[in-house]
Every structure is written in C-alpha cells, then in structure tokens.
Length: 289
Image (cartoon, rainbow, N blue to C red; front, top):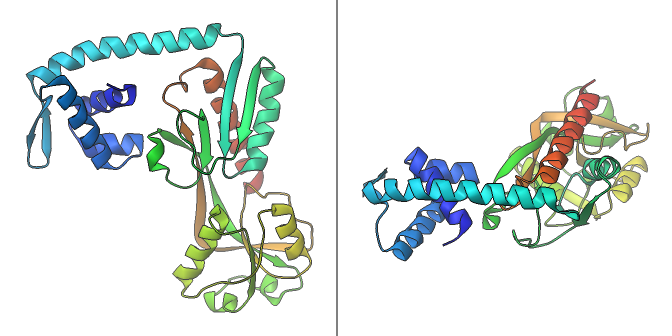
C-alpha cells in the first residue's frame, strides 16, 4: 500500500470519477484505475461499484475512506513537523528550462534562508525519490507528481536587425522557408517548439547551427548567421541591439513545476515555491512593460 495510491483513492472517492482524479495529478486515467485496482486486490475487497464508465463508492469504500482520511491527516502533520524541526533543510531541484529565472530565485532564497541547502541538477530520467521539484515544460507522466503552472510566455522570432524580415510588421510562413535556423540540440525544449511551429506553418526548418549554450545561440544571431525561435520572458534582456524580436502568431511556452508529494507541504519547500512564483510574475511584468 503506497501513499500516492491512497491519495488517488481519496480524490477518486471525492470526485467519483477516475478521469477527474487523473487530471488533478497529471497522469493518464489508466494509471489511477490500475492503482486503485491494485489497492482493492491488496485489501481483498472492492471499494467502488462500477457501471459502464461510472464509479460509485460502496459501503467498504466509505468505511475505508473514513479511516484513511484520518491516517493521511496524521501523515501530513508528521511530515510537516519533521521538516520544520529539521536543522538541515534541503531542496533538490531538477531544472530543464528557465535556468536564468530559477537561479535568480535560488540566489534570493539562499540569502533569505541560509540554513536551507539547494542542490540543482539536470537529470535525464528523474524520479520522485531523487528530486523535490522539477522545472519543465513537457509532460512527465512517469513521475506521478502533481504540477502547477509557473509561467506562460510568448515564443518570438529573433532576427538580426539588417535582415529584411526585421522591417516587416507581420511575418508570413513563406518568409521563413529556407531561412537558416539556429537552435538548441535535439531532445531540448526549444528544438521541439521550433519543429512544431514550423510544422504548423507547413515546412521543415533548415537548422544550420545546433548548440545547448544559449549564449552561443544569441551570439550567432547577433552575427547574422541565422534566425531563431526564443522564449520572450526567459531570454528577456539577453540580446544586444543587433537583434530584433518579432511575434509570430500566438505561440507560447508554458513552464510547470512538478512537486514531490512527500515533501511539497514542508514549509521551506512552500517558501521556495512562493518566491519562485513571485520571480516569474515579476519577470513577466518586466517583459510586458
């Protein structure tokens, strides 16, 4: 019997709908259904009455819900108490995107809470045992971690000021066909975004330079070696006056924070998340002014 399994059950007991529970935890409905089936098998009794696509808590389920509700409340109190009493607080961050804003937050948080250690890492395949918070813009189903939105930002076209495109008020898809693109490496967020936007516009981007170094990408654009699709807030203020930024359609990138269910109720985690939201909101306001 697992903690996350019990949380699935409690939410499904309240919603009477596995799909709604799946949306809340950002997992496929099948993950919730299979988890509860394993729980019922372990208990040796059905907790829900199932009819077609509808579920309803039965008598055993009602009794189990009452007991588990009290137990989960005690677990939450214990986690909070232990976390607050711990002298050596720690936050394990896995950062996939928005490193500039995240590290600004880390710097400010460290000054406010010097007793909390923050470890930043980039993990290709993180799991909930390795990290407390994951910053990403892509679905991470296997983590079984709830998420919340941090930032939604426009995707802009970065062009050298001498490029004829920089003088156009409206960028047409045909203007981009055959143009040299500069982009991050494959499997990166911006690479996927570039491929998707160009695919929506009906062509494949001619990528002439790949790099995982944002500084190098910006320098290549400033030298007129190509164009690039970039996030408006994350890369705010990072270009020289040699580069013009143009909006194309209404494409956006949304950054999420995935939260380890075992720790995100702890006070130092909540304090970091509050500061992180504040920093993202501040950066967004600066971009929009």
